[in-house]
Length: 349
Image 1 (cartoon, helix red, strand yellow):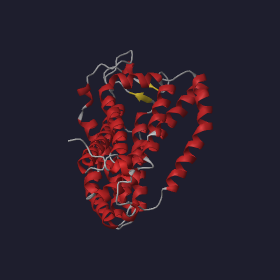
Image 2 (cartoon, rainbow, N blue to C red):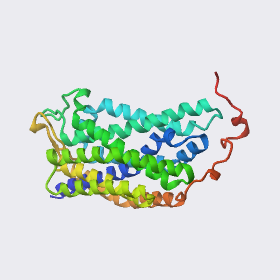
Image 3 (tube, rainbow, N blue to C red):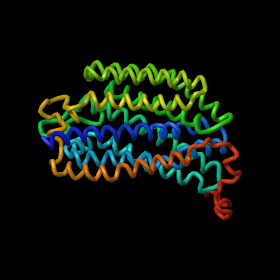
Image 4 (cartoon, rainbow, N blue to C red):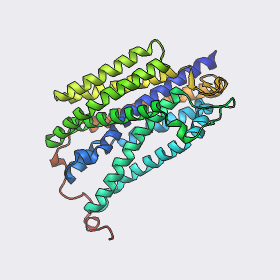
């Protein structure tokens, strides 16, 4: 019974980790994907980047912990996911690596063409994960072809179902909205007004798309109680768009976060007690029981999590508090901020 109880606890903890990742990295992806839309000149583009500059790498820790917890607590789930989603996860990994490189390298050379190239990389590598995470989790909820040995029997194209693509479009639009609201919360002047207008336009697309995905999820895979999380997600998203129009970006950002939380709760709630359903052979379905590690492993993990998690949360909360104020144009110096010798460097033609 102890082992069974711990498997449920770790399913909830993994759901919590993914929820935190999507809320925090969600606005992160949205800001990066909107870089060239919101930043009309170099100063504004640097302001957009600086809104997430101290935060983006810390936000990715949630992904590392979620992946590590899945590997340790549910190794069968982890193995089947990577065997079935290997191409999508490879593309996602390359995008995340390229994104980190772009943030670090865009300011290394004082050259407009150099910065434009890296800006394009930031936009692309922010939009790709925002899309692929929705596709991946929609497939996890709907199920994928697994045989009795829990091995994936489909192809990469098997994952591109209408439901999965709608899930990807939902996460992309909601993350873009989340990011636009975050920029409006962290900046002032013309950049803030552009972020407001962009958020309103994105809201017009995000509301119907997210509503369609949530209703489809509830009708096809939902439990009785998940209708509450579906309703909460829809109402929060509508409320966020209305509040953006009134210039209440603080509350709007809170509601876009609530939308992401409620949507993630809907997905994991629809999934439980399975962790990866089989769409072809019921015997191949992975559950919290047959995919879990031994009870002793879960006990050790629980004690480690209890000791480490409060420290990590406190540090990240402190980081957000330190970098809480708005960024103005005066905060961006005229030069790139590089040492004089580096500022004279040019990209070879």
